[in-house]
Length: 316
Image (tube, rainbow, N blue to C red; front, side):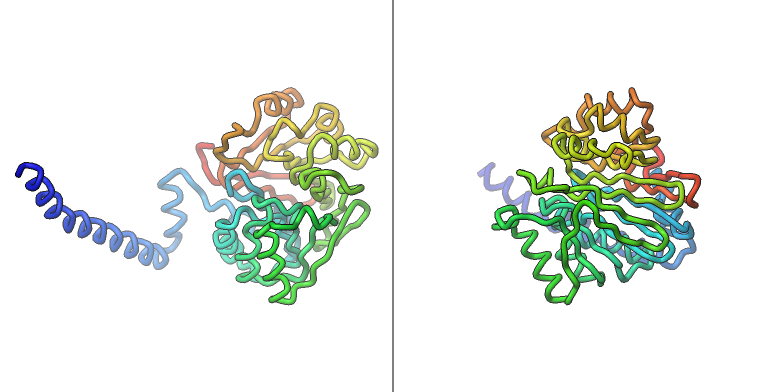
């Protein structure tokens, strides 16, 4: 009998729990609606939790580089004088959030959607994003068929690219693209390599005196090939390769790049990224390093001479 009584008591409490949940949900919806009507409502809410909508700081800059907080994945936005390029698009469940970020920046169209390589944490969100945001071009490195076979994220992205009639193609070392008055030079891959990581597109971005080096997931083998032309590698900002994995950012490579800033796109991960040895190397080279798992979204802006950096989490 006692067991039966406990079950009855439990049943009587469930409606109250549901009612409380519905009240809380209604309050959140009402608060969200109210915030849209209050001047700077969202900004005040961000501030309450020690956050800032850091993307706003870049809206009036002639050049900006946004590293979005998508966990252990990559999603980066380049804006120059009205031209836009997205480099990677996170996992499959990131596409909608990235589209919202672009829309808040009043970006409804991309000049370039670039995928450094077809691993799920780089191409995964493109299917959803490109169904919401139009693009002129979708670019990848040249890859053998076996590196894209049985890859549902790649297949979905290419399905949407075809459906939306987006021009798709490949780029490799020696190619270059114009983004406003910025130049995007493709430094890698120089040749077909044995892994998707080492076949990553490596991009050198030049805007006036400001330079960025975006490494995708390139590892030590790709870095060794890049070191054949060390004069091309120097950069103010280094997007650290492979989320701070020990397989990347070797000592000779870091010495050649000699960055002022490093940025690592990373989240909680069983591999405990970024690795301590990589962080120590960056510190030894006096690289001021920012991490999305601590800073949230990170935005670099430039007037072609000076570089400024801002981040979302003021406590990061």
